[in-house]
Image (cartoon, rainbow, N blue to C red):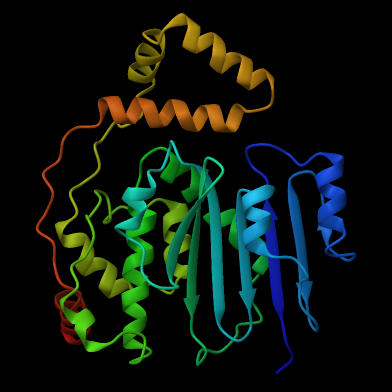
Length: 286
């Protein structure tokens, strides 16, 4: 089997200027590079750059696929929109890690399946576009992508018995976000990319409360914006004019949802063993 690696980076909040593009170009002469993207695939050799550094300095999203079973997707978000302490509850080994850098938080989601077969029919170039919407969802306060990654990490234990030691049986799940039974399209794509088992997800969703039905009602959002101080609105409009429209939108939705979201009682937390055993039982039910 020949080697195959695919790299894609996206600049979402702010495009790269000419100097930044030239620096990225120095890392790869064959990559397709624009002000907002970097795409390259390798059938021999390796990428000379460091994805972690590129996320910290230039890009907001990154996807990597290799035909030996590695799936990796990364996002950079403003730390004022996603609390690092909240993220820490969901981090687990190499499967979901995070770190702070210069006012931002970088999330790193990884799935390994070295025994799996590489599907050459998969179109790697469409993967990031189908998943990247979870970045805006996280910025707006939706924690389902973090829980999905945590669940997928422990689900890998069924494929690789050495993934965790037996003490992990008693680990408790992190806070269960609402809406696990009604994932968005980007969340479904991410769950598939991280190889999350459908039965395990169904079991996890049993204690997840439904999402509020009109979370972003246009009339409520308009009324909320109207009540913002004039100085804040002027500052936000100036940032839109300076090319920060995507980030301003995230900040507005984050603030709106934080102010209007209903208080939902937290469900009881289950153990890893309880979740995995329940999923195994569901698979064998007639």
